[in-house]
Length: 141
Image (cartoon, rainbow, N blue to C red; front, side, top):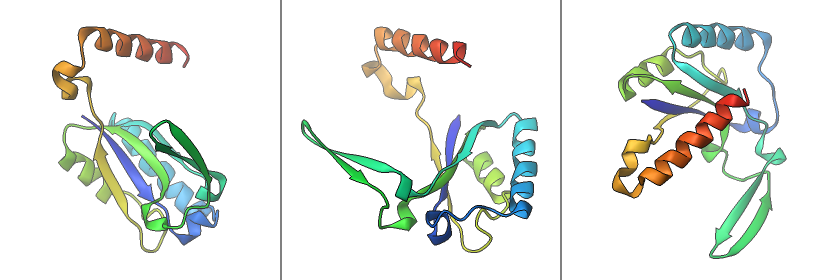
């Protein structure tokens, strides 16, 4: 099972404040634990929404909205992609995480869809296409 683990933004991350050396060191140790356990697939911090954009879809129309975005409680400051055996295991790993902001923080855990989750709508042709794309991505690493 794969899970996307989302670190929620706060006023400091949205202001572009960077973590101090102590937090970077703690996160580095935590990420090492994740790698040693075979859990970590990817993980990155994100720039504030002021450097981002959103594209709103309405039928065939596309509207670009430049950041910053108003509701920081719904914004993401960083993420990990983990491979674990269950949601409970992901929760246990998050509980071991250093506090990402040093004050109030929230981390969200969301399961990633796997091919088999889509049932018969994910036809053999679509599965083949997916496998081909994944192989192309792996080859570029």
